[in-house]
Amino acid sequence: MCAKQAIWLSLLLILSTSKSNALTVGIAGATGRVGRLVVENCIRSGYDVTAIVRNVDKAKGDPLLTQDGVTIRPLDFAAVSADTAEGIVGSAFEGVDRVIWCASGFVDVKGVDGGETTKEALDVVGMKYLLPTLSSTLKPKPSDDSTAPPPAFIMLSSAGVTRPGWDAAKQEKFVGCADIPIVRMNPGGILDRKVVAESMLRDNAIGNFPYCVVRPTGLKFEDKEWPRGRTLFSQGDVAVGRMNANDLASNLVDLLNEPSATGKTFECVTLAGYPPPKSITTVLEKLNTDATIDNDSDGVYASFQLMQQLLPGEEQDATRLEMGKTYEQVDRGEVDRARGAAPTEREQELAGSVVYDGDAKKGFRNKLKRIFGSKS
Image (cartoon, rainbow, N blue to C red; front, side, top):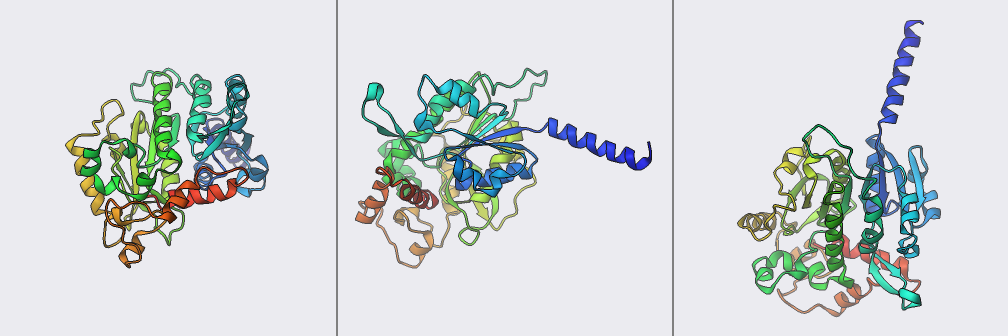
């Protein structure tokens, strides 16, 4: 064998070994705005992707989801029941090593014995049928290494989910993050449902598989709206600000190999103008696990005070925002809500449109993006 042949053989062995050792990441909500960015980052990191989607035709028309290394699998939770969940969910996630949950919104749920169809948060329906099926497949293999395994299930949730449930004293103490549009309006009760979904994940994951919950603040998908920067992590659900969606997607994929994130829930914002760190491990190591966090500690209040200083804009008062408006509009005097003021008619209409009617799904999704894109 000549030297050139030996080199090519070595390269082929390296490539085949790398491919055989590659993770397969199941991404729920892969056609969504965040989901697509996560797929893109997974491909860039050398992972195989199983794109879990409701609309297969839409996915097949997306060049990102039809390239090598990406497998499209259908899963419409509106068609799943307790009797069919194991088979349908099991088929969709077959061969998946890790899961990143990026799906959100509402789904039609059929009543028992032909009862009335109702709307339920996709997060809740997804956790109901997904977790029991995946509990065994995501269970980490036994290891002599005492280090915690990295998260096998990463849930994308939202900052602010616990705040509607705070008592009056806590809401007053943390008014700068409690009296903001998404929390005041809580359209469709979406924040309450996300809290339920988070709890379902924790309850199912303990003793079964490693997990983490990521709660970004208001997402911005264009750098002109909020440029990429350094992710700032916090705990206690007191973060307010903006998160560049590309930073978020990069973080979600990085967490696939971060044992220090396992068993933890944390919020994140993008600190514009700062370069991203080479690794987020050191920061994550200092965060508390869900089993040890004290959300009423002085440390959480200190985090709140710090986060308030990092708010976008010059006025730095999120309580003056109206739903769908920006910090820059507050700075220009175009919006100046009084703290504690009742919602405007426009805000009520926007919030009420979250639970869509009949065939208005596209309009619903667009309005949901507007709300969660400027939620804090």
